[in-house]
Figure 1 (cartoon, one colour):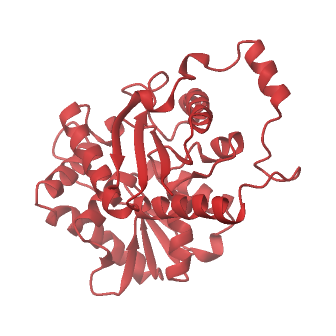
Figure 2: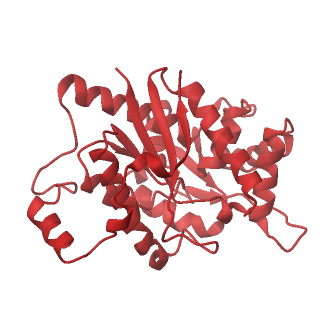
Figure 3: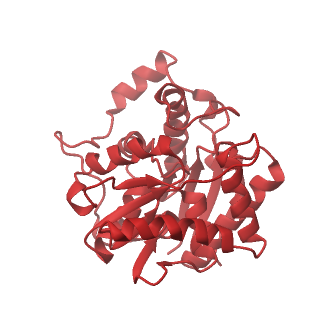
Length: 306
């Protein structure tokens, strides 16, 4: 039976070093092309972007601007469920900033890149580590490990570390990262693989038997060019996109097949908001009613795995 997933991105790739729409299209279209190979033939994925509360200077590690983005994220995921979607991805970034709020708001599965990657990593090994793209992400991703109480499944010393790029221009390391991905998609992945592998070797020496790429776009590029193991070590490199696609498909199947869905326990974290509270919020004009429209209308790319 066919499945529909809405992937609502909190990134237009600007924080990754480009505001060029052509370069953005290359990155996102390649991610979706890779998703097509991963997903089942009857899985349909729509990718859409936050439109109202995201700007060119958005910094994903800062809580204040994220607070405003969360409103649109949740509103549109709620609308997606009403429009017949079977699951949603609440954001692009591995930082997974909106997952918990979005999961509480709907009954359909909401899947995050970090959680999915860490679940897979714990199935492949006993001690994982995360390699991300900037120092500013490290504490956020460590917080996520602690939130899930998975500290024991990660290496004890600095379980999240960042790549160290050298930048020759004023645009900074984000531009270096984007250029490496663009080069990889143009058939020149050597620099990207070398940079990641060199840093991953250190994590292996410190006890990691699985390394997770803590950046969704970079991870997709690494997997797409066939890099899936830290060279010479036998240590798998887990990336978020394959993990979250398969996690979503599994949860959709389990909900349809045996009726499993998120907990509605009073003491649980995902108890759905009662209708009377939602009605009261709407009556008082709280929220973003202007984004409550058919969720696929603003999708920039629709991918069907057939």
